[in-house]
Image 1 (cartoon, protein in one colour):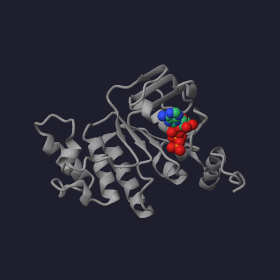
Image 2 (cartoon, rainbow, N blue to C red; image 1 turned 90 degrees about the vertical axis):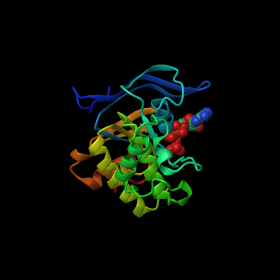
Image 3 (tube, rainbow, N blue to C red; image 1 turned 180 degrees about the vertical axis):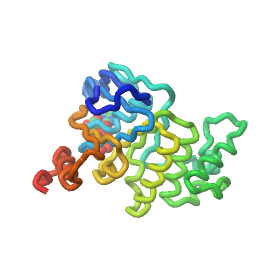
Image 4 (cartoon, rainbow, N blue to C red; image 1 turned 90 degrees about the horizontal axis):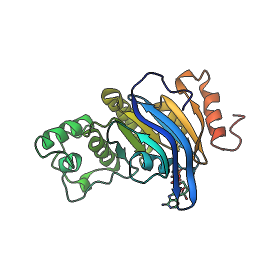
Length: 236
Ligand SMILES: Nc1ncnc2c1ncn2[C@@H]1O[C@H](COP(=O)(O)OP(=O)(O)OP(=O)(O)O)[C@@H](O)[C@H]1O
């Protein structure tokens, strides 16, 4: 189990001995992970190391070949693309899967939280990329998930929108307190958002860090980049 996880807390998910293979190709093996409610965990790693594979397993989207994933409820996922239904209004997109009674009110509250409370009856095609991603966040939060899985949700956004989204997500997570696993390529994003950073290599957690406790931010960045295999970064 993770050396840095907070003891005696309230797990949003506990993973033990996870194995995930595509056919005979084992991508993740014997992986342990625990995320507490209210804890924001970022998962960094080189392309192809297995980040999305892990996230999809936690989301219950793919079968696992060994191990356990224990979670108190159904996780919500936000992907890189908003994945909105083009033929449904924003409030219907957000309330998809909720009981009909009270669905519009719940969607209205969630859309208001992401700053789109005046767009309930609009269509997805009328949104900017950043707005569409905010709707995807509202759709996740309306489920009141104990575990929120974010698969590079800001990667397709311009730099300014991405920074605004960081602020919004931080605020929403502080209010709703799900456990969060954010898959990202962006070291700065991980440092800005996460309570704990995991570095994945070849399907295993190779390192973990608590950014808050890093004495020297420059050295911490350099260390992360070195762990990610970025050449020349250790000396930075
Ligand atoms: N459906 C699939 N069938 C076979 N192999 C797959 C499948 N999906 C992923 N893989 C393989 O599993 C490994 C891990 O892929 P994964 O998408 O989890 O990596 P990642 O760390 O999320 O990469 P990226 O950062 O580029 O998104 C890769 O070698 C990939 O080729």
